[in-house]
Image (tube, each protein chain N blue to C red):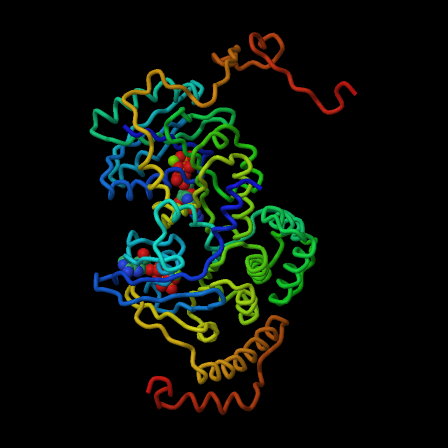
Length: 232
Length: 285
Ligand SMILES: Nc1nc2c(ncn2[C@@H]2O[C@H](COP(=O)(O)OP(=O)(O)OP(=O)(O)O)[C@@H](O)[C@H]2O)c(=O)[nH]1
Ligand SMILES: Nc1ncnc2c1ncn2[C@@H]1O[C@H](COP(=O)(O)OP(=O)(O)OP(=O)(O)O)[C@@H](O)[C@H]1O
Ligand SMILES: [Mg+2]
Ligand SMILES: [Mg+2]
């Protein structure tokens, strides 16, 4: 089973990218199954189903979405195999920029959009820095100059990645991305595999539902911020 | 500079681009073997929905019989292998269209300097000044280097995009999709791109812009129906059309300035009545 993680901030065009590329993969004879991870809700399953793709949804609800992802991804592979797929695409949104769902050895794609501003590539963290392919969407509505500066900043943040310019509406770039996706490594199981970046080990009352603000509630792994003028 | 950057710059050199025919919307073969070289300006004309944007997109992705048109694009006379193709795409082509805008909120000079930085040009300050001067020569109203990008008008925005693409983008191919309504000096814009040795393709519905190309590709029903060399007579026709256009432009300015149009030059009524006859236009023949 080819395993591909597709991650990125909300509404950058992840689903559009997967939909357009899946059409190329299907034409090449690949059998694609999609799992959408999100925090609270998603309409993406309807979009995938409309395109004739088999899809499952995982909502993290009151659990940290990154932890939810890693606790379920191997089950996704089992599901995809049972459904007769040979390629599993895991789209995840709602993850925080602190973490990344990327798995060592599995093709890792990060989707970002040019509309989010030219400094965004620096802010995203391991989701972008540890990706194999960075897909840049929405270039159709910004200037060539901004596209070039944005792509340059992506390369600075992750010099190793292949950068693909993608138009989620026309599908421009889908042929290129399909070429990379078709080469994704296969796995029998993800058991024993590792995330590319460790998730936070913090355990504090807020992790388990505390809502009250105040020193009395800040136990366990607490880190306090420093303010301008401190220690001067 | 990383090895990849060096490769990027090397990949941007291009001697020729060849478009080989595919199939039209009905599946009939398209006879086409067209080679473009640096300095060429080619316009793409055809009815709405005929496939002008498709043709530009085929070039953009270096199609290898894998787009709806089935066309193939050769780079320097040969099909790029898959790896080279995807490594080249995006570095070869700069695009400009009516939908594009600046979204960063920075002063013009600061942003252009940022673009110059990422292109690693030697004489940054001079290039920035050149880009802004060029843009001002193309646009109607001058803008200052300190103004914010987001405050530029539509025409100023388009002018800056063209100047920046011509002088600062490494891409040897420029694809322009319908910018005729932008209110910029189209001839100067094309001259600027030609002077930078780019291959320029312009999709357009505008007769003057169509005649500004060295050649024009006529698209119908998804395939290239003809490639027309712009003749000396056509260039002469363009000169007349430009004069008419200049008058309309002057009228536009007048209206913008709150003026009334109660009297027109005498030649206008002669012209209008000559055109009002039932005789077919000379070009329909
Ligand atoms: N103009 C333009 N719009 C795009 C592009 N790609 C996606 N969009 C639009 O952006 C919106 C969001 O796209 P989605 O694919 O749903 O984004 P997503 O990242 O999957 O969103 P979530 O999964 O909800 O986080 C849609 O309206 C798309 O049509 C693009 O390249 N250009
Ligand atoms: N040879 C072809 N085979 C199949 N489909 C085609 C072919 N050429 C064009 N098309 C499709 O026809 C549709 C309209 O084409 P396109 O958008 O390129 O038109 P256009 O000439 O740019 O129109 P407009 O002037 O309105 O911008 C597109 O969906 C395009 O993919
Ligand atoms: Mg989505
Ligand atoms: Mg078009």
